[in-house]
Image (cartoon, rainbow, N blue to C red; front, top):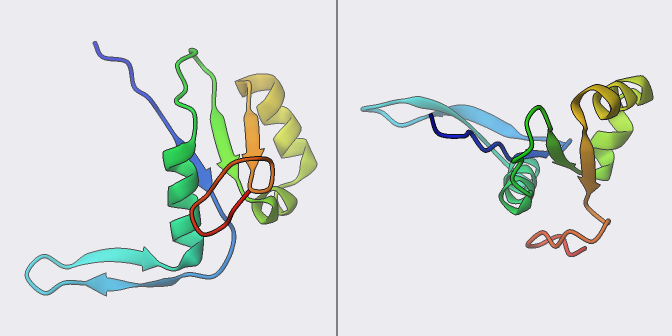
Length: 95
């Protein structure tokens, strides 16, 4: 089979959500938080190592997560975090 490649971007903040469309309505979320997470995911390094996770997250998201959760992910799932401000160039956000 083909290898699955996962890219993840996480951002914390306000969003606007609703159902869009009339013929084929679907739920969607909008806002700067969503755009930032999407851009982070698109810039993320693809994970090619088995059982590894590569997460890009904003500093606000990292602050919201309990330290024990972050440590557990780092040790069990080889978590590598890249926060905005750590050199990642996100359109509209800078480094």
